[in-house]
Image (cartoon, rainbow over the protein chains, first blue to last red):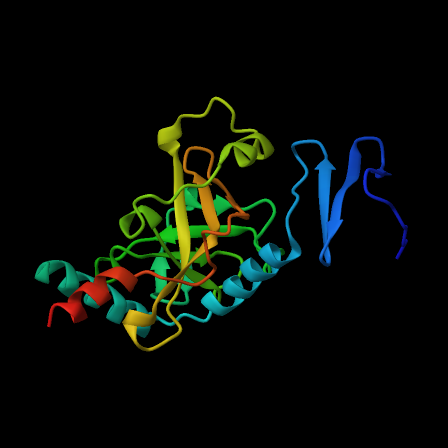
Length: 80
Length: 152
């Protein structure tokens, strides 16, 4: 991994069309500004990780739980 | 064609309705072909059955049925998928349901990774929503159940 030191206000260029601006550093947080083409997905890593985790867990959902849930929902709606 | 499904056994599917997810989904990026299956017994849920792997099926649902103000920006995905100019009526948004808990009241939805499906093109993409309002485990019966218990 390439590791660079940068001060507030400095920039890192990645290729021709991505620029990473160090906007602010305080209390253990780095605030970054990112310039990139629109077709590039930029996410906090946790967002991807949470979607991955939910996908893997949800794939285990069984049919029994689903029937129960649909039933629950129908009965629930009727009561309201 | 006949397809062995995880939730309904062997059934006949309409091949023209197979949806391709060109990028796959996080955790399942090799699997690209899916089909939405409906069944009276599971309405308003649908099954999102993988065609490439019989053992893989998700449960999906229209998020607006339980969160009327759900709001995500589909524009970047429209651009990425090159769907500019497509009819908005052909675009469907679903969230993936987690029904692994035997208690139906504990069913959750992943509000961070909705599926955007273009039924005209038979293409889909799993969005990644970077919005702190939305969790990957939202209890879909949350408010309703509370109201019910509160009214006892």
